[in-house]
Length: 340
Image 1 (tube, rainbow, N blue to C red):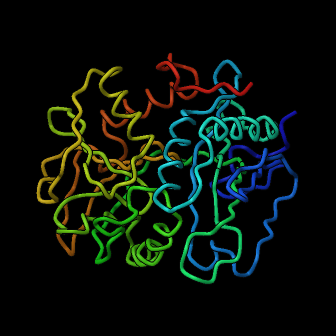
Image 2 (cartoon, rainbow, N blue to C red):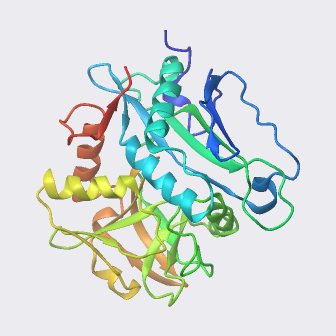
């Protein structure tokens, strides 16, 4: 029985659900893990995560489809991406098949929190891992905890997809050979001052340029970016310091195989973005958020077709991908993990 929640107005925040999954790594091996109602984490004051930020995370969603199934979208790719993050941060990889099973089991235990079809809401799933034993010298922890919790979240667009404004900041998101390509907590900590400053200046987000030359477009603090050319080609930045977005990967496939559009991943000099007609951010939370303008120290680039909401191509991408997620459109094989 669904929880008594105002699904239309829950926003994008944390609501405690009944169960979460926990597994501990000690003496070189992961235990079997378990579901628990305890939402607290107890660790040493000297835990590796507290001293040296040794932590990584993932984010994905469960949906109720048009035919009343509960499904997850491509959790195998989240498992693989977390494995990459763990390897880069000298953390033990949680086995990818066990990752997917932990996600499924946690969603099953919280089915009453999965919002109904048509509400625009979904169940956000947060797998994460951190160093848990005391570490005072600068080195990787020896013990870790892997957890998965869920929380229902509302529709990202409450009053329609309104265009946002980005700025190019005087900050870098990642080092040229750093951790920009993994989902490490420290990357997001480094972006917090920049995003607060952007908001204080009246902007919605920061668009970071490449940290080596500061001439090429990369991504924002929490999302990848895509552009649409005047002849309807989808173009996305290529860089070793960009987080490989599962949403972006899926959108590019949809563009090619469902909408018969050309796609290209390439280095995009900032000087060339004035030639694009649409722009949008892409990620798990909103799928696509239209960008109307980018401001670079007074210089403004306006995207005419997405300056007042989603452009024609961006809207088609959004409708097709969300249609796949909600069971309205037949999905590519392996994209949808059925929960119940």
